[in-house]
Length: 281
Image (cartoon, rainbow, N blue to C red; front, side, top):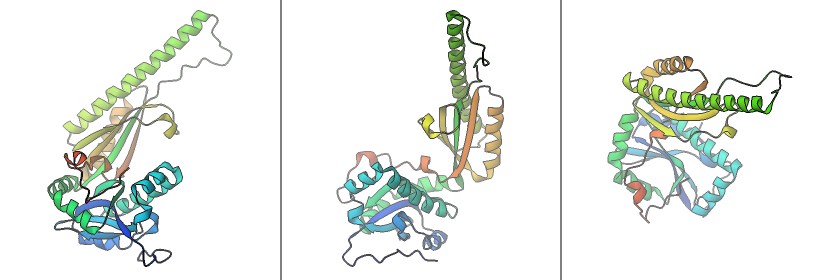
């Protein structure tokens, strides 16, 4: 089934190019892309470069100006919808070939602008895509979750000294659990590297407690690049390390497209090209 917009675009509409990901040219991905709807329900297509290609949608230029995108990212409902559409395209194609995901709301003036970027960064794209081939991203979150020290109902402190002692015990328990979580994270990194169960790791900021429905303070928020043939061994090794650690809770998520390992070329952050404007999150 080919993705068709609900209503035809107006004849005088000026389009920009929304880019989801970069990949090495691949016929299977091109066929799969024809079936997909992307951001705002718009069709997905493949823009071919010399030996790389980009997954894109044609979008109304006036809806994806820098100001318009900033407004969408400030609206939680619109942001969630945009992020969901963006991720679904990448997830649908990641099973066919290695993809280099681009940041949410990466927009180019036109095909030529994006093709110039593909050409300028071809070496980086080829090297990174070859490294990502056959790998998935897996997340490991480690939480400090000390055993409860709440006194039984009716067993209130008999004095101010008892109260302070109980507070100190609770605080020390939390500190020990926090250190245990950090130490476990270091052991996981070291063990996975030594066993060749992960070829890369990225550490992100700990997740705010408000984003987790489960108890504990997030101390380690890591992403690992895992060869697919080692997926089961990776999971078992992390679970075994966690099982012997008191005061922590471990959460393993995945597989994901390798968002954490899709770093731009080193010089890209310093480079500006007025011919290739980009809107990014």
